[in-house]
Amino acid sequence: MLLHCNITYTSSFSLVSSSLCRQNHPDESQDTIIRRRHNARSLSLYIRHNRDLKLNKNPNESPETFVPPPQRDVDGENRSKLLELSLVTRRTPQFPGSIYAQSASDTDVASSLPSLRNFLGSDGDDDGESERELIVKALEIRRKVTKEIIKESLVRKGRFGITYATNVTDRLGDFVDHVMIEAAALKRLPEYSESRFNLRARTVIEDSNFVPFVRWLKHHEFSYNRIAKIICMSKGNLDSIRVMIEWLKTIHVKGEFIAVAFLRSGDNILQRSREELDEIVEYLESNGVRKDWMGYVVGRCPELLSFSMEEVKSRVDFFLKMGMNQNDFGTMVFDYPKILGYFSFEEMEKKINYLKEFGLSTEDVGRLLAFKPHLMGCSIEEKWKPLVKYFYYLGISKEGMKRILVVKPILYCTDLEKTIAPKVRFLQDMGIPNESIGNMLVKFPSLLTNSLYKKIRPVVIFLLTRAGVSQKDIGKVIAMDPALLGCSIGTKLEPNMRYYVSLGIRVHQLGEMIADFPMLLRYNVDNLRPKYRYLRRTMIRPLQDLIEFPRFFSYSLERRIIPRHTVMVENRVNFKLRFMLACTDEEFERRVKDKVERRERFEAGLEHSQPSDENILDKEIAFSESPEEKEDLAE
Image (tube, rainbow, N blue to C red; front, side, top):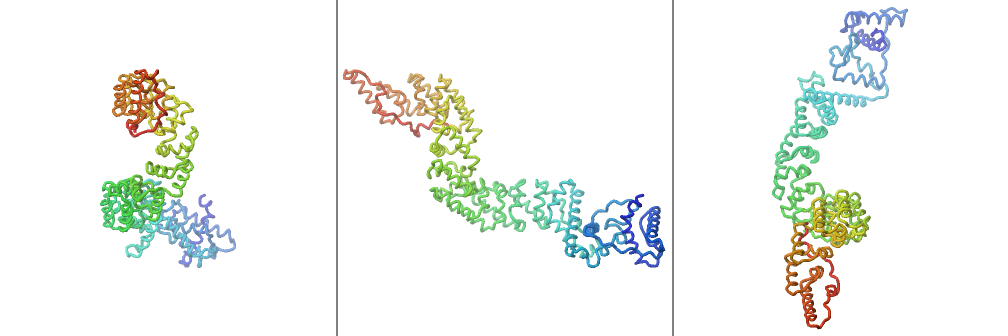
């Protein structure tokens, strides 16, 4: 029944093979010509069916005078299938009674496989397809065969999974072509002149140690994509890759950065001698790059390995001429290895000239780059110019921009739309005008580096809910002391708030004190305790004096509070804390002298009443911060 169902499929091929055999053996009968590896039952059925088929087609003609029909033309699709069938690597499964061999490795393929010349015709252009197109198609099929051989080697000999072997093989385009060329070249040798392509391709793969090499690269944490790219870079010389990897390991390049060094150092890395590479490493070591840093630097800036020695020296001199010493240069390269080999000289010169427009000298730019070399990786058009325009909109002068650049240069590497603008809008929503925001940024540039949702907003909420600051004063507090937004709630603000409350200060009073002197929450509690004890026990002052003048905690106990209190006791005079501390030494002496004279006149009866402290001063003392007032701050 199988033969009967497939008779329309097999009859054409059987007729072609019968005609070919009849041409080679004209004197033999049809029964003796056909030589197939069939069992007796299938052979007898096949002969009987062909005989009946010929009689049914032409009943008036005898079997002996039967002429086979002319050969059919094969369309383009069947021609491609037939061409691929002739180059297939594996034998397809056959069932008993198959008409012809289905693999080029079969012993009787010459007799059973249809002839390509007979099917394609003598000119090969029956359907308009040229010989060149046929050759290209044959090469594509041969390339598929080679890929299958490579994949089979990875699976069987390398014990890789099918998926992994497929992923690697699909990316080995250049290496596949190399195997094809080398396998074709082996046919010229006498021992391989009669061998099949599959055997020669396997020989090339085994001689190159391809499978163990892939296993070795995978052991070094190479992904299959990088393995394929590196093998293609070698152009068949896999030993050069092994030598280079061993050299990279000697300079402490580790893990995935070995593959990065290969892929980013250029195609000439495998052609460079080890002496040239050692010379580059030794020169960098002599200029401040420590030996244990070298692997980190080369792994993140592998372009260095593609430079000539002259270019490396010129790049190092470019930075040393800006006033850097070797230590600064070494730490700069370690912090940002790309600065040494990633940018062109023209690009670096342009960025340095732009930084000089802020009023910096060449030495200042050198110190700035040594402190924050990531500036060299920022774009002038995309990063710096939009940020400068934004600062100008906030009212920041050129000197203010220079201070921000020197104090916090990382701001010039920060994204404007995602990082800086949302924080400025948050400050504007609190009612702080743009001019005050600009002054805040100049005074405390680190404000823009703090997280909005993890740092700034929680501090504002703490001041409003726990510290007693009112809604109308919150903008004033932040504008007066923006450094509050950088303090930790758990380790700084919360302990300070609890200390003031423990003194008997109510929360709403604490909020008024913070609105008057926001720096109150940034002091170290250990420095506040001795001042408070001296105020209550020695000076015998009420707590209300401290609430009215919270700036008392900003003055030094040994250098200002104790000496002036001693002078007041000796002269039997008394001032409020504001008038006692918020003035210079000369002005304090003048006040004490005036107070003593007034008291003496009062005692002599020359004055009917003694003036109070409020009438002593002609004007209020401005609350300006002096270096002495900042000494107790926990920076």
